[in-house]
Image (cartoon, rainbow, N blue to C red; front, side, top):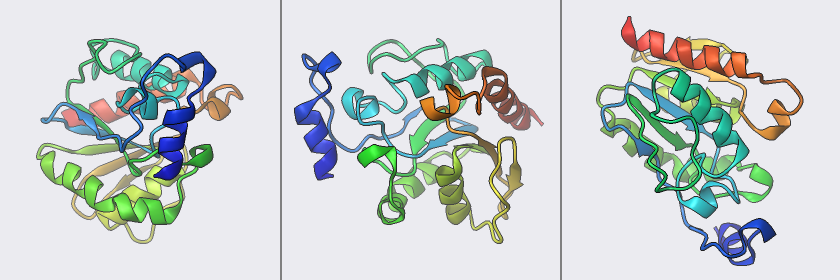
Amino acid sequence: MEWREDVAREKRAAFVEETYWGRPVPGFGDPNATVLVLGLAPAAHGANRTGRMFTGDRSGDWLYRAMHKAGLANQPESLHASDGLQLSGAWVTSAVKCAPPDNKPANDERDECRPFLRRELEALARLRVVVCLGAFAYEAACSEFGVKPRPKFGHGVEVTTPDGFVLVCSFHPSQQNTFTGKLTEPMIDAVFARARALTLD
């Protein structure tokens, strides 16, 4: 928590004139969502700055473009919290609610934030599919939904939980993955097309 607030005070040069959110970042989207997108944690100069998940950073550029193509978002980008982005049939959140150093949340942070995630899940009465962005989010989802043993994480892996939800895995749209080609636009597009199709079955 202290690190999150330090970042908000010190800021990045490109955003020095902006007021950072600098607090835990809640999920957002359609309360009637059938698809939940689960990330790791708020980015230091993305959601920790804007106050909305995957907003104002490169990961969000990839995410919302894919969601827009799948019909889950009304526009393909998210620059700030009042830019008009609306989600339809989807909710976006993270396993950890505060920006961690180096974008690497610890397991104890995930465990401390678990009650917040659980309340979000309980409020989404129509939820059917969880898109897990990265192994950390996947592990959090498996823990929350009681998946044992946990199948190995991989892009495109699908796991049905004991309660009948489907977890669909994707590599995280971080620059580390997108710049190296580990994750391509067709790959993430396919994940969201599949997630949408699962809600129509």
